[in-house]
Each structure stands twice: as C-alpha cells, then as structure tokens.
Length: 464
Image 1 (spheres, rainbow, N blue to C red):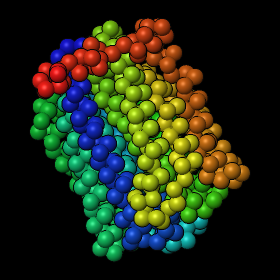
Image 2 (cartoon, helix red, strand yellow):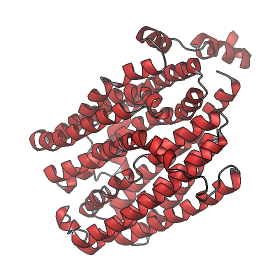
Image 3 (tube, rainbow, N blue to C red):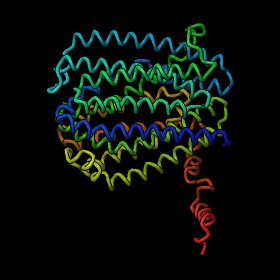
C-alpha cells in the first residue's frame, strides 16, 4: 500500500469520523430536546410520520451511487471524458425522476388520509401531509447531493465532500432544534428542515463547479447509451435504500402497530444507543470504499485484496470494543440521556448489540461488491432478509413484546452472512484460509511490543 493510499485512508477515516460524530450528535441531542418540549405521544407520532419519506430514497433508482463508483474507476484510468459523460447523463436522469416523484407524492398526499392510515393521534391530517411533503423534498434532494459528492470522491477528495455534507447536516439539525425550542410544532419544524436542505444542495453545486474544472453542468455529454450500461447495477442498488427503510422504518412501523407509540419510543431510543457501535462499523466501511473502487478500477487486485482484509479486521476490532463499552454503560446512559422518560433495559440493549456483531463482518466485506458495481445478488439477499425481518418484528412483538421485536433484527444479518464473504473472496481472488490468516496478522508497527518500545523511547523514565 503506497503513501498516497495511506494518506487518503487517513483522511477518509477522519472525515467519516466527523460524519459519524455529526450523526451521533444529532441523535443524542435530538431525543432529550424533543422529549423536553414535546409530549412523549407527540414525539412517538413524529417518529412514525418521519419514517415515511425515507422510502423515497430509492427514487434515483440507484444511479447516484453507481455513477459515483463508475466515475471513480474511470478517473483512476484517467478517463475524464467518460467520467463527465456519466455525471451529466445521471444528473439529468435523477433530476427528471425526482421531479416526477414530487408530482406523484403531491397527488398521493391529496387523496390519501395519511394521519388516519398511520394511526396518528397527536398530529392533524393536514400537518401530517405537509410534514411528509417537506421531508420528501429533502430526501429527493439528497439524491442529487450524492452525485455531487461522488465528483469529489472520483478525484480522491472524498474527505472534503464528506466533511462539507456533515457540516450541512449539522446546520439543518440546528435549525430543527431552534424551531422546537422556539415552540414550533411538527409542521413548521419539517418546513425549516426542508429549507435548510435546499440551501445545502445549492451550496454544494457551487462548490463542485468551482473546485472540479472537468465537471460541467449541462447536457452536451449526456448519453442514453451510458444510462443503459449503468441500468442493471443501478436498479440493483435500489435494493439497499429499500432494505434500509424496511430494516429501520419498517420495524418502527411494525412496533407501532403491534405495541403503540410509547413502545416505539422505548424501542427506537434503545436501538439508537446500540447503533453507536453499528455506526462505527459503517465508518470503517466508508473509509475503505473509495480506495477499493480506485484500486479495482486501476486493476490493482493485490491492493484490493489487502484493503478487504484490513477493513474487515478493523471493523471487527472496533465493533468488539464499542459493544463491550455499550453493554457496560448503555443502560446508565439511556437513563440519563432521556432524563428518566425511557426505562432502561439491559436485556433489550444486549439483543440489539448482538445484532451489531452479526452485522459487522458481512457489511464490511460487502464493500468490495458495492464499490465495484457488482452487487446485484447482494441487493436481492438484503431485500429478502429485511422483508422477513419486518414480518417477524410484528409477530414477535405481539408475542414477546420488545424483546421479540429486537430478536427479529437478527434475521436479515444471518441471511446476509451466508452469501457475502464467499462472493467478496472470489472478487478479490482470495481464499478463506488466506483471508483468515490475513485477519490474524497485524502490521509490525501496530504490534504491542513495538508500540511499547516507541512509548519507552519517547518517555525515557519508563525504561527503568
């Protein structure tokens, strides 16, 4: 691994750490603020209604993610003309799709009694519809932002794009918090969030045009043939936001139907705490993914194999540490975080943390498949697993309460582990024996005796 790869990995790690820190701040600060200024039933209704717009995240049909991978592999081969062709083709396709979705969403909200359908008791029908519309627009803008960030990723500046996006997310969250503190209701809060996101998208467009001369907005280089070549992996990529929505919002809705809004708050907050560990794993994945795309695009299979081994090794190490910490302090933290509003449950939290451990290996290994646009079967497995999870979540919640709902989350993780690792090993031309041997090997610079020797040299008093 050359110095350029190591430097980019370091910056990717730091930028993703900032992104996860921003996400953690949003989750940790948001819950106590909402519970302080809103009632628990109102907050439970807010969680339920805000879960609906997330399903619009598949509106780009995966072209944003696939285009990012394709541009990165093309730039790695110094094919800037091809990368621009991909960018312009996907920009106009995503714009057309999102505009169409907004029109369809508006018509659906006009016709469907959403508050009644979602069994909301604290938010009126008209407010429910406006909340879904505002947040839907925000989700749709995120599809264009993904393509804009990919332009930075393609030239090895993924860290800059990630930090900029994190800054915009924190700014939008600050607008939400200020509106809640000022006494705003759910509808105004959603509108403020949407306005902040529109501003962020415009700023990111200006930054890309200024920083990347090879990127030009327009349609002169857009080609239908380019879209056709990306269609199959793009449609498959759509399975991931669908699966994520089923895994996150789908289970929330299942708990809401089975146990009511109060149980939604208990389940949602406990899972938020457990997902601190999961987010650390995702940070490792996001750190290595751009580099895997670049190495594979440049046909450096040996480097791709090393990156795969090191990412899985680091993810398992990080998840083990964080899970151990959360088992120890999680219930105490949950009590103080919610100011006693949500009762802590070590059993519930332990099940959710077990889900993270099972999730770790397959999710990190799957980065090889997603980063190189070879993820069609992976997406099919993911949708199948998360769909089964939603059904079991409702059934087990009715039977065993929140423990049953938490246990259902293990299903999709077990399904994924049966497929992902063998597929990634084939792609990196690796063997299971070599992979496990690489996982057990640490670079000499990270071995305990070497670190202690360095420490003793930096502090001479320790040698005696």
